[in-house]
Image (cartoon, rainbow, N blue to C red; front, side, top):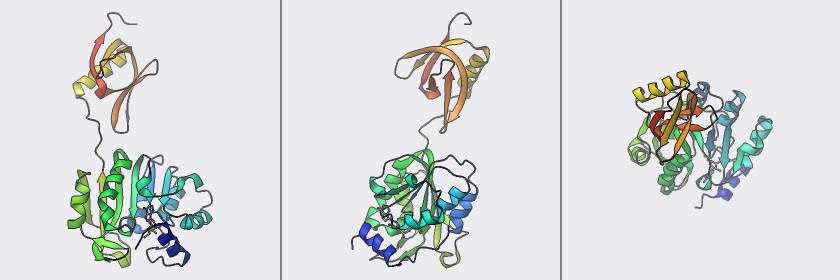
Length: 266
Ligand SMILES: C[S@@+](CC[C@H](N)C(=O)[O-])C[C@H]1O[C@@H](n2cnc3c(N)ncnc32)[C@H](O)[C@@H]1O
């Protein structure tokens, strides 16, 4: 059986959408409820009618994207929520999709895929996440079908697949599943390691002192180049520490191998 766009379109056309609960599932809803930062880039792959996307949008999230093989379910989403940005509804294959996200929400997408694609699923999720970003959602803890979706499994089967990429991983029995899925779901939380190693706090103190005293400094960077300037600001972005020089240039702190001061205050 080819699980392609025609297969899924036919399911929507004929109303064979047993997975569709008509609202965001409780685990996803409660997770979305506690998201404070409304600017994070969220992707919902295999989103279907995308109730989670609508819910997050209504709560103020402005960077919610949905990708699905077919646009059949998007029409209904736009009827329910006409101000959902159309250009955030992507029709295409998740595995061919490129982009960077802080959060990816899983809701009955993993179980819709041929199990032979699971390794690629994990690999591509990892690829789409920004460092420090997370894949969060529910997986069935139930064997389910072997010949057609939904395909199930258990923590014992899933965990080694996810561990290959995600060191920071938890997959525990879900405590707030909807009634019919009660006891049959795992709550997945997998975070992509940040590629940033925080710098030594003594070194950071030197940068702070240099910024406070407005000292003109010369920085040697990991690529051998040098930059001279006064530190205007020290800040954190995407889990990494940065400085902005007064003339505007930004330098990630772990790229600095040396700092020396000009003899006189500028
Ligand atoms: C079981 S449905 C789940 C829909 C939605 N998440 C929900 O819970 O209502 C699976 C969805 O994944 C989509 N899909 C399947 N394979 C896909 C792929 N390779 N890329 C993007 N979407 C895909 C299908 O079109 C379908 O809408």
